[in-house]
Length: 230
Image (cartoon, rainbow, N blue to C red; front, side, top):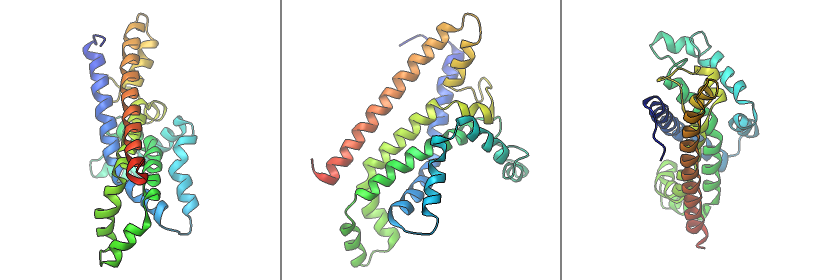
């Protein structure tokens, strides 16, 4: 493990905190959207699916700019939130919002696939026995989809951890507040003698990303064993 300076540790700690908060905030919305897409047919379903996955194909700076004009202090939503003391722009909470938006498609996709793989007869049986839709979801659907949900959370966390374009566009690159690992690497590569620090953070980022991908694959295999018994 490379020896990091206090400045580098702050970037690592901030990145982990932002990625964790982004994942936890995105989770309930991801569960609801994934369940809708997996279980319901409604007008505009294709449009909703497209909007959810839009951050995957849009340039990250475009997503960051859209967040800025929406949640900035003078934005459509940000102005209203600022009146009650909630400010996202140029704050670490804004970085968490940007990271959550960028990781949201991966979260929803993994959870949706888990829901779709569940045998509907099990849910129908619970409904036949008198369970409500919510109780069926809480006691049957959710436990069966748990490995896929965790895999989606890991993917969202990994995406949030490596996010750069949308974050720097929305909340800039402020040391100790919004400077994540990616932003710190960018900063160190722009100053003389910063290569060593950038390389240390690259190693940290690669190690964390590898651990996240291995964990995601493990949970995905667990989901496959649960559904198919292989």
